Length: 389
Image (cartoon, rainbow, N blue to C red; front, side, top):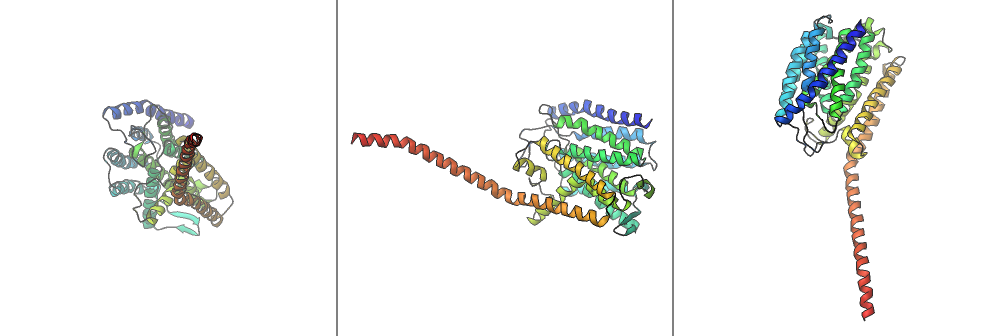
């Protein structure tokens, strides 16, 4: 019976999103609400945005039918947060808002989730020897974690397909986790949003019917992923018994699931602060920008490479987490982050110099070829003059 519901929610979300996105594209084009490319953009022509509108109403419809599946009335707690982020994201896509306005809206949205008993983290289950945690620590850590995830996901929405593919990978993993732990409300929520993202991806990667999810979509998806992460950490110890990794490794598994947005955000913020800029100031130092700029690969290729890395990294960590304890997993995580950070640090700080060298070398080659051509043109004339003498 559950399989039938899984199928209906996934297919229903896919169809609803797939059929309504063309209407959104038509409206956006008619009202000229297109995304204008700038010097940081990875696209060169004006493109419809606001694809995230379809995520909002699909999730609201799904939550209405999901209200009987939740144990702590979670469905009703999602709606205010989603609505606030939808309005703020929509306005930011139409009229750019300040980062601090969006930050306040995110905090208010997060408070609705934190106030529900289902998401309360009472223990870290022995992670580095920590068990019970005070309620105020839960609010601080839970709020900071969700805020980080929302903004991290928002930041990776920089090239075609990336945010959708990474979102699909993360939701696939959470679907599996919540299915194993019998949390069917969250399984259906994951399948609903995954149906939206897969339908959206076919348009986002299209050359003729392209649309961006915009902040309208990335804030909503980031909010759902943040909430799912909070729920994953708040599961009862008995629920973890059915999962294929040690109980104390749960926080590290959560980090591995979100490795792509978290790593990119940490790296970007570090670079911006090192350059004495605001951490929210836009630039082209993202991991996906370096891949397409340095390796000259397409948006689609870069998105699938990053999404594939995310999936492989999670599988490796789950396998290691089944036998290794905190210290070894943390050591592996730190080494991986340092290696990736150093790799992209080198690209980031030497990329400009390399580019300058290439441009300079090309100019020298052009100059040499022009001199050579000029010499070849002059040589016959010189010979003719010698003959005339």
